[in-house]
Image (cartoon, rainbow over all chains, first blue to last red):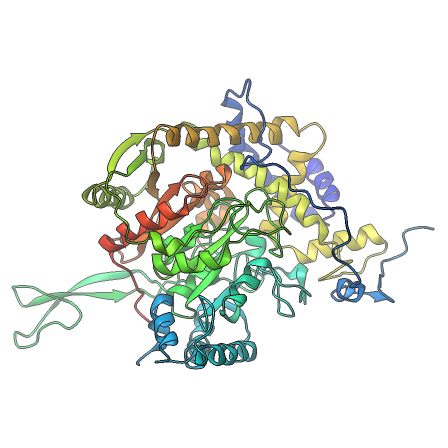
Length: 95
Length: 521
């Protein structure tokens, strides 16, 4: 399978990365080189093989459903580019 | 004492405990070495001098009372991927501009609890994506090793060669260093360069496809990627969560064992942290490997591999055989599919993990006309080319209609790769010996690799299988090539059998010796 520039632009939008025409063109070539390389996986017979979900067989760890953390709003917003009273500020999303 | 930076961790530990030297002296020695060397090597992105001095002072107070942990007063470098409270943590990406976490990663917290001293944050490929340390926002790291040329010099008969070999005919050979700058490998290039150039006693590193072992091999250092689940991933910036594991890079096998003992733990904050006690890895060093079964996988003999790598591998086989191990030929039939499967699984996980960098909660924000425009502009400005490439591949293979063909197929192949290893371990193989990399260190801005991303990816051909199967792997220096560059061998072990890796790597180290670059910086 290979991608065209239209697909590259669509994927860039899905990934929320702005791309110029020039970027998209370059990426089309690069992505096709990588997709060409991974193509060889199709020759592997995987009939009856389950997809891997975990490299180590282990039971999922569970803990008591109690509050163990919190009350650190100031820490959480400390690195944000824009905040007000422990809220993250973003451009208007609802009209 | 001459140069305190020359001491290994085990040597420094003994001298600190006997109070022959102080943590402050050792720390000052490293800080001045960094000041002199870093403009040339670019291994550190931040040096935390004041913090290092405070920590050293606290260590000296403990040591004076005969107290202190297993790493008391030992100065370490920390890869920029590890969250360090109040200190620059950016995964060497512009998107995390100005980020200083309000928490400490479990691994670094373990190291500080054992008394280690933090010298600073080490350069790396952006988000650990790369094999040359050239994708860092902070510029490439330079390998302290350089190629050299053997020249025959005619000597006056009265003068006998200093540092060279005296030949019967009154000539000697001398190595002349080439000026070309080489990469230290990646992604833990800053860690490897700093350890090799004596800018820290040891360093933390991480390995998703070979990012500890490949740079270790390129710099003549020892690097171990432990079993998936051995070291907590909590507080370490995520790249591909099912593959990421942290480990140390050190100057010798014993130092690597000492560091891993401190870094590894059982951590309730990481649900993939495995509930097994951490053994005393150092105790495995010096144990005989008599009767141990060492597997030699035929699939690791790849086309175009330099003869020197094959010769090194044969030397490694001979050393282990001489030490009493039984050498057996094995087959890992799905080896060639590990790298292509990796370039689906890792970008897929990365595209999901890196979705969080949106200009809202931390790091860079580039304003836009609405919120989506802000996201897109922030991510376009914040991520470098390689990171964007991988996010794009990951987004594509996970997108509707392609998930089964790519991601599901890759995860099935991954199970086959793991099964290959399980079969040879069930057949009684204790450890597997392979080359660590398909070449020695290459030049900065290598044109072939810049033109084709897949060429760069091939660096990890021998290491990536280990991440796909979640196994432990260690790279240990085993010799120099004709140009005087270090080459490494890799040992792969059973899950959670890091002890066998240290035990066997030590046998190789005893036979091969340790390697130091000639100082030019």
